[in-house]
Amino acid sequence: MVGKRSDVEVIKREDVYQGYLKVRRYRLRHRLFGGGWSDEMTREVMERAHAVAVLPYDPVRDEVVLIEQFRLGMFDDGHDPWSIECVAGLIEAGESLEDVARREVEEETGLRAAALHQFHSMYASPGVFSEHVSIFMAQVDASDAGGIFGLDHEHEDIRAFACPLDQALEMLDAGRIRVSHSLIALQWLALHRNEIQERWN
Image (tube, rainbow, N blue to C red; front, side):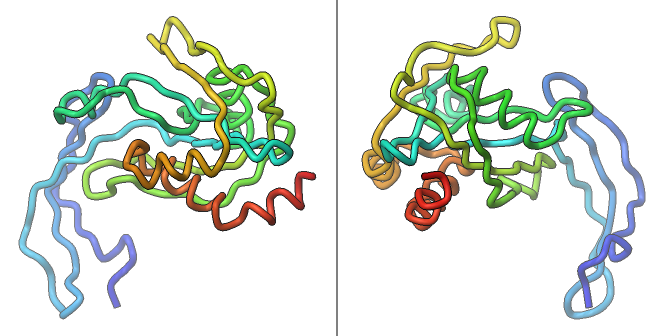
């Protein structure tokens, strides 16, 4: 049965670029489901720190807090580069997942997370990208949510806004929310709304 790291033979591994992202090139082969080994292949993977994504939710008002910011990948692909999504940030050395979740909620929305609930983790595009994202719900008071946030030294220009969960789900259905962890977070909350409201109320 295939599925262990020992089922991969790395012939050569080298770092070929280091900038905002690191690119690593592999020459490798792996075991096949039908038996034997694949031919030798060359593949690149983009590496960066793992991340945390957080959907702030006010269970009393039944509102989520979303952010909007510029995304180069969407611009490069010819689309509107201002992306509506949930809060997210990279894990720094020595931080727990919960530390990152609380820090990013405050930095990107100005709100305080009264409680956290981790419900999933994901790879957005594991064929080429090593980043692993842990996804949380954060309990917040959204009554005063809104404004411009972000860190100047990270060139962040983030607009935070609150909206009813049903309106956010309408934006999702209309294709206005296109970031994978944000899709997952909103769909999870739609399925577990009553459970989260009971837990946090």
